[in-house]
Length: 264
Image 1 (cartoon, helix red, strand yellow):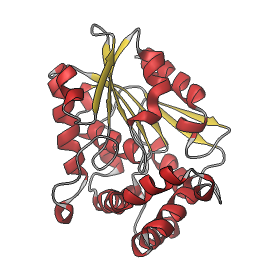
Image 2 (cartoon, rainbow, N blue to C red):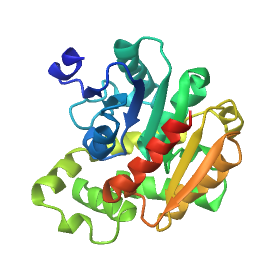
Image 3 (cartoon, one colour):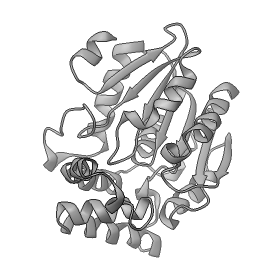
Image 4 (cartoon, rainbow, N blue to C red):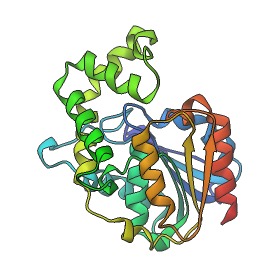
């Protein structure tokens, strides 16, 4: 475990060595640090594997952006997990882009997942082509991709938080977000190009917690609506917050996730 951290791989292993493993994935333009509250609350009972996704935090950059898709993230995540726990089963947690990656992992490894907790997974490929909400995603991604780094970071963070959010951030934080915006564009490429279907999600039979905010954007809510109809063992949670509730309402979200883990 110490080797994983020492080599700046962006994989952080903490908690109870004898506990069940919990793999934790963050949102775009963020890092594993957003899950510190959850890590702390799980430390006595579980072994947490908190992963910086490619291009964020202390993770490496994407080797070949021209061939990037969610398989690129998947291979690295699963290698990291297996370096720690081998082929043992594990709980899975994800927020937004991390939630979409968590869903893909669960679809491809349904028998290994003890529980799946997702806060507004942005699995946008599940929105039907030709629908207005799918076009909203395409248009949003196009604006981010065609803007300057500063404009793109402002548009992205203001959309998922609230208008004016970016301009109130410290200059250092703004610069970090601007530096990571190219990866945000790759995230959208990976999300839209994914191939598994809603029907494929039916094979996920473990306890699923689908969490969303009452003040969140329509596009993330539409994904939630579709997923609620396919999981055989799902509980829906709504909290009085927006899309970034795992950060703004960290305690409340962590408690829901822990409740889902304990259901297993």
